[in-house]
Amino acid sequence: MPTSTLLLIFSVSINVSVGLFFFLVPVFRRFFTSRWILCQRVSKLLQENPSLVRKFFRDEIFTIFLFLCGIVLLISGHTLNDPFLSTEPTVLYIFAIYLGHYVYKVLQDFLLRDKIPPFKINLLHHLVTISTYMVFLYYQQNGISGLNGLLFEGSVIFVDLATFLRRLGIRKNDYLHISCVLFGFIFAVVFRALSPLLILTISLLKHNPLKMDYLPLGFFFMNIVFFSMTNGWLVKSSFESLRRRIVTRRIINELARARDMSSFSPDREARVGGLVLNNSAPSTQSTRQPLSIVIPSNESFRLAPPVSNVNMNGGGDSLVSNLTTCRHERTIPRFDVIVNNTPSTTTSTTLTSFV
Image (cartoon, rainbow, N blue to C red; front, side, top):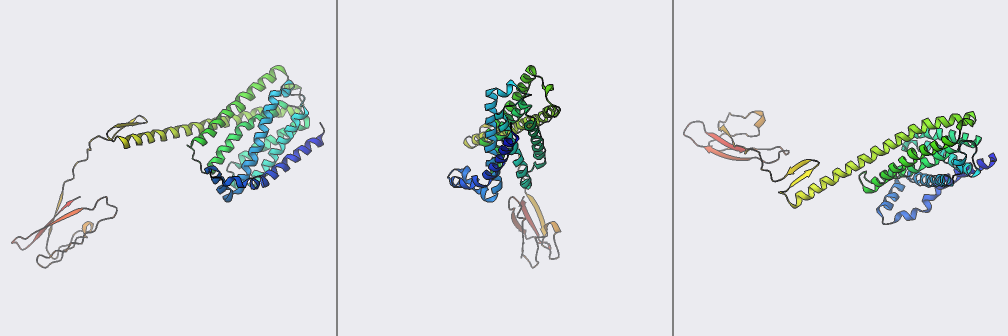
């Protein structure tokens, strides 16, 4: 395979990526003005942060294309016939596109690093992938590892879609988001765990990888270690994310069912997560007793600071009460003023407060 042809395909893939990033979204922007709520949210996100919308559509197009290419190569069986020593030209063309895809992603993520939280982790993965496929293209060996890399992209489709839905404001417990997480987990298990293990086992049983050159052989074992760790972490992360979404959705449904039951029949018991809610239980709160405060009507008498809002003015039977209550109180207390006009020199006033 001429190197110039591979370089041309590599360059074209980068140029196509740049063209999709800048021109795809503006061309189809009128479709985002639809009445669908998702289209309206995409249009709003495009106004607020257009680079993330362009990045998503460009990445999704290339990811879907490369994953379908991997499926076609797997079904055709050309790579499985000679997985280590020789690679067909068609497979090398796909590898050149895959290499251009990740070289572009490194430049794109670097420019958008402030808007992509796991930039350093993604950068490490992209650099390892680029170096691996450069060795594949130069030596034209170890095509089976390159085929597995194409199949890895299947789970990326739904992972990126779930992330984009979160940017659109879709809740994590929404059925659309849960469906994306579910398919992402299924594709991660199938194409990042079961499929690579099965393909590698069949290849090792029928062929000997030790016949490859030293550098492709070193990258072969390095890929097994690195991508096994990466894929294992991704499968575990997908499972944990799916479990959290299902548990959250189940709790919300149980609470909604309990709320509906209590609204239609308040005397019925409702069970939520093993807890029985009985709205008909009698109240055990004790009745508050009235508090009587006896205040002498002496002119020189003043209350203590906690209740100093009650002031008395002398002058016979005249009584001035300046009562204020805190606005944070649940209820305004009621005061009954009883003036005891006794023959004694000191007249007492009894305030009964129901606090």
